Each structure stands twice: as C-alpha cells, then as structure tokens.
Length: 439
Image (cartoon, rainbow, N blue to C red):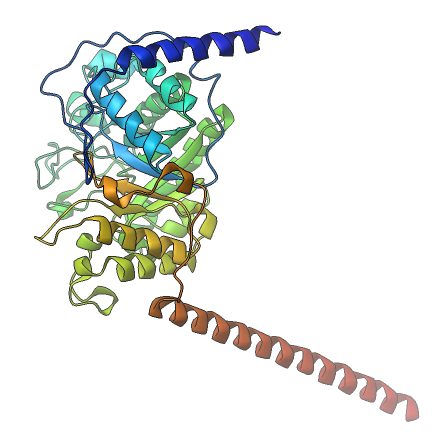
C-alpha cells in the first residue's frame, strides 16, 4: 500500500472522527426552509485535522452542478458548517459557493499577504482547509466567490487603485462605497493574489462577481486611469483581466466562472459596465447570469410584472444566452428570496429550475444573501444527476421548437439554393467552354 493511499485512509479516519464530534451540534433545519443563521460573534473553532490533505482528496465535480451561496460568516462556525453539510447530505445540492471576498472589501481567508499587511483580512473562516476537506469527502464541489472591482477597503488604503472624482478624491457609489479602477493592474494583482491563495487552500473553482465597471451613483463623475475610457476600452479591460486570470489559474488546475447581469444575455452592448457576455465567455469555464425575475423591469419580455413570472423570465433570458454562447457553459443564478411583496417559495423556485431543464441546462445555483434556503424546493440527493423536461411541453418550449424548425428549414432552403446556383454556374461554364471549341 503506497503512502498516498495510507494518507487518504488516515484523512478519512480523521474526518470521521470530526463528524462524530460535531454530530451533536445544533442544526437549524426545518421542513420548509433551512435557516443558516448569521453568528452574533465569532465562535471558537477547534477543527484542524485533515487540513494538510484537503487538496489531495478533492473529488471530480458532479456532472450537473446544483449549488447555493454561502457567506463567510455561515462558513466559519462549526454549528453552521454542520447545518450546511446536513443540507447537502439530504438534498440534490452538491456545490458550495463560498464568499472569500465581499463588496465591503474584507478578505476572509488567511495567507493573503497584501490583505494582512493592509488590514483587509478578517478571520471569518478559520481552518478553511479542514472545512473544504469535509465538503470534498462528501463529493461537494467547492467554489470561491470573489467580488472583484467593488471594494470599500483597499481603494481607501491604496487610492492609486481607485476610481476617482474629477477633483482627484475617491469616487463612491450610491451606498458610499469605493471601487477599484478596472484598468488598474495593481488592483488586478491584488485580486490574483487572493485567487491563487484560494486555489492553494483547495478551492476547485474561482468565481468572479462584480467583474464590471460601476453602475450605481453619479457614474458621469468617474475618472479612470485610462484617459481614453469608452465602452470599447471598458469591455476590453474586463476581457483582458479574464485573459490574465485564465493564464494564471488554469495552469494551477482551477476552473473559472463569472457572474454577469441578467440583461447581458439579450444585450449586444456592454450595458455601460464593460460586460460583453460573448467576449467574456471565451476565457472562462462557466457563465452565471443573475436571471432573478425580481430584477427585471415591468414590460421586459412583454410581461407586466416579471417578478410574478419566474418560469418565463428565466426561460427567455437563458434562451437569449443560448443564442450567443455555448449552452454547456451556462450555469445561472436563480432567485431564492422575496422582493416587492411577492413571496418566493417552492413553486417559484422549481419554476425557475424547470425553465433551465426545458432548455437542457442541467446546472444552476441558488442565491439568498442571508443563506436562508427553501428546503421544500429541493429534491433528494438521488436527483442531483438527472433532470426531466416538461411533459407536455410548455408554450415557451413549443415556440422555441417552432423557431428552431423554421431556422432549420431556412438553412436547408439556403443550402439548396446555393447548391442550385453552383450547378447552374458549372453548366454555364461548360457550355461556354464547349462553344469556344466549336468555333
């Protein structure tokens, strides 16, 4: 028996001991929802075993990804970790998207030298290697979510990296938060340092959020280091960032994903924020449009109230995306939260998921900022590798089928017409040659 095998056996034994120790921890688990409460204060964490082997026992990701967003404060205390693992063990969920840097600018993993030197490190997730090992032991895929350019700490420490006002002061958005200048290579380096540490700790994928220019506040006052700032240079800066990320992270074996505005799936512009979904997709493994029905304006997709039509909104948004980028790269964020007094529960969540399945998009992620998930909307863990399309087909599916059929018929007619023109041209050419010989 080789050393690697022995090490894996030892790791499994250690993890089993940890699970026995934590079995008595309180689990906030209910029949309709699973509430992963935010801790009131930082709790003492004692799990350290298996930290050295978290990377080695990393599983292959599931064929289909079904995940949830987990804040740093949910991912730290042992009782919340136990509640999360219970949710994974008993539902179709198989992917954890863990915040390691949020818009406030706090970095939640240790070992990032720049963060520690500038006071942006906050120890919310202690013993992260051990936690990742526990997740991977259950074949749970791990994604590190990093908010990139919206950052309310480092730009204040290092103004040279920040978006400025015309007078040189720090520009802030509607919430009085600062932003990195997306053209700043120093800001890029800081982000890549966090990414590389996350991969070193054992995360299998890096997910970039807020991979864009500012959209809220008086953006007309934004001054960037690129004096020739325009829609074209903005979208190029975002793509160049992803190119560099691809170069650095793919060589380390990590996958890359991006979160984008839901509107990018049907827009040909950069939406004023530098996000052009087609160009961005080339450099990443997965694209997660945030197709939350509550975030669409009244009248979009011809709907008087998109928030009350979760199936149609998600279907149409993703259908638009499929016309522009590869289906296999789509892995949307879906809405598991209530906005504008229209409650979202099991029916609304399953409607969004079904819209994905009806377009043959089998992977999805659920978003809730407070990490309060509708457990009744989740199927058992035997459903994580399958999906079923609506039967009978929905009106949207029928329209799509008719559209595809019409496009296919048009394509066939064009090919036949081209073939006919080619034959006619060849015949005419032969006739001309024959005529010359007869003369």
